[in-house]
Image (cartoon, rainbow, N blue to C red):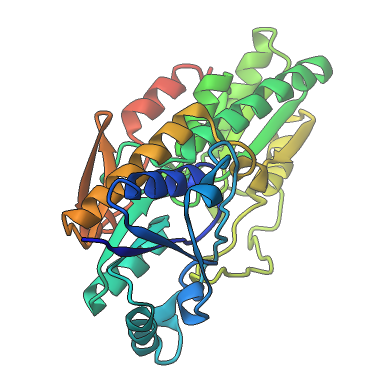
Length: 349
């Protein structure tokens, strides 16, 4: 039976998205299904903005970053009469199923759509690697490699100028990028959202290294790391700033290392420099790992549609592609395994 399958990318862009789209199209060719790209996330359904995805459209995109069908953080269920409009538009487009490629926020929308009656399949995408039920999400490996390269480059400057260098990486609620890149890059301290920041511990590491003849230190900070206001002695304890929110209602992060740097400089007496890696982490060409994982997810998602495994999300467990309910995937965040963090802590001295 020939099916009409809509596919969309939702949330932030991520290396490997195009590999997924290519996998979906190429697998669908075996069944002569029609793949419709829904442009700019869920917003594309509301605006009826579509494009047919065939071999020509996905040719040569495997190594490209971003997504050829665009993305947004638009949520149908945050709009007036959103559920009603969504169902009407899907019925009008005559989709047999919709494959939603997105992160934790997008999976919540996919679950809402499924509960509303949409034949929805989820594919987990986020550089933060914080979606529960899957060992890895594509995009994470690329981000880790970019952050590791940044640490390697900062080492030479830090050592030459005898400075403490702070590198801020992404990681709202989970510090996977910080931990993996920090271990790979030889960071001297790694700060993550899962563990309270204790500034005196960081100062002790810096000073201990100095007494051993190490006149520099590299500190990796996840953007979601928390500084308790009671910890601050030398800077404004209110930490007030103009807080903005994204379309999912989440606080926009970035800049915590600037507060931390000022405090550390006052306490340690060392010259501190900061680097905020920002959006560089999720741009550019995906690594081989992310191309392969994205391809495997894309191929498997079509098999899920054929098997009518709606309301479920692709996952990789022990290097095998499987699936779990989207409801389970969004039941909690996958935070950093403290055993891995303990491995990193061996080098915090």
